[in-house]
Length: 301
Image (cartoon, rainbow, N blue to C red):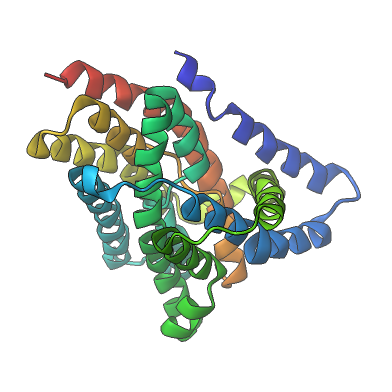
């Protein structure tokens, strides 16, 4: 199954960051600066470019868009509910809750092109444009509450949320930057994914998962088990066309976002715990994502 190799480059970048931080002079002090660069500049530029230049076509994909939002909100509700477990560690939950509902947009775009070509990319771009703001808002809330930050203040200052909103405004208003500016921003954004993944590796400490193995297992089950099941139910309830059904299943089964680590660190969360979850989610996604696509294809009428 060739899709098993889709996430291999991400894992190799995480491994490179791990090795560089531990066995070279590029130690934690260096990677702390990289994390700030990714969080405040590279990821925001990438989000703005991706969303502002996407062909959203909302009128043709209303059912798909609604289903994608429903999948995301299901993940938010399930992950928030875990806080009610007796003895739940507040910082671990605030840091890790985002793992259950955030998604790797870069893998989504690559997979959409493989599955449906240009049309698939347009559909996934619509889901990204709708769901990234919701996911970022939902990710900031528990971290802001745990850290004692003002929630509205954190939302208005969060660079990921601000860049997403600006991207949507630019897209809907038809704003297009001059070509030199657009090319420059694109070159800046290209650096976001590799540096972000290497920063995840540099902060990796698998031992941190032992701090809350039950929480880790529950969050990963939501991300890789519960959300695809929600998507499967929505596909049949809405009678989505097969092409859109495959895209929705791919969206629901994606590994979590690598930027989750940077957000957790910058807002005072448990960064090593989140880094371990991201790595395990990427590993699980290599197996679960193609399997869920196979399940959907077999169940198609």
